Length: 343
Image 1 (cartoon, rainbow, N blue to C red):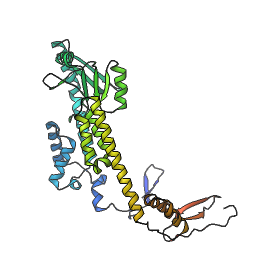
Image 2: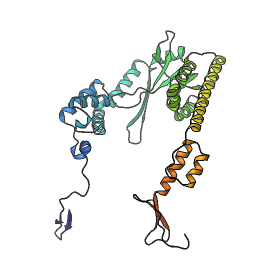
Image 3: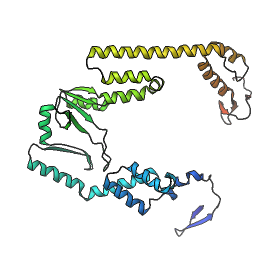
Image 4: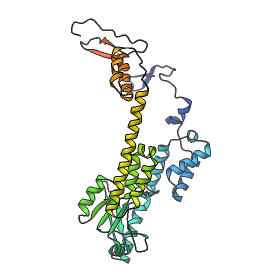
């Protein structure tokens, strides 16, 4: 639609085309269009009840999608629902959650002067971080504060903020919560956490949590985990079964030798397979006949793929320019070159 501004300030439509200038969204995607997305009042009511019950956003959406026969029938997308929930949470916070929290801290401090809390706000006065510790936690630290585990895995459902607990172990092997500077801190492998601990807990020793180490190993070495059950077993043994350093080092070195032997066996198998087969040339040209004699099958495949891509192009002179550009062609492998003595 084309409009023209008139002298009287009104707009006049001077042309209009009914045909769409773009392709229609496929049927499988039409529920993603903005005009089709809306959270129904009944769905909002379920969302509010889920919030009060502490059910997570993902669990609520999964429940709603089951009721209507799939996510494509919900009538909204994940982030539409998430934005709605966050808007409701901000409304609730404005109505007094922050005030109620501060009143609670104040009353606790009146009952027990040892109760401590601290609130960090941003430039706009909005709450960023909250820290608190009660008298019992301080006493527990005095008895059991040699080692601390800093755990941020748990996230509260109400405000979707990280909840970080300072956890120790008592003489019943029960977890307890406390706060203060300790001798040893166990955390995940985080550069930001390591820097913060070095600045704040200057007298503490920082170590990585063994659970996080194992999870990171499973992620980084997934190919080894999937190819060798023995490696998974040995790594698990090294994780839990050894308290003596010398015994752990022996077990660790034995595990590495087994992994190394496994990799060399795979390399030997690849070498054997290479000697038993010959890669297929996509084109019978000298450069590929030469390359297949030099490269392993894996490396030759990479080389041949790049060579075929290089041939699947044409060189032409761009209008108005003195240089040459490369463009893809579809139905021919011929290379056409504009006459030029400098090419």
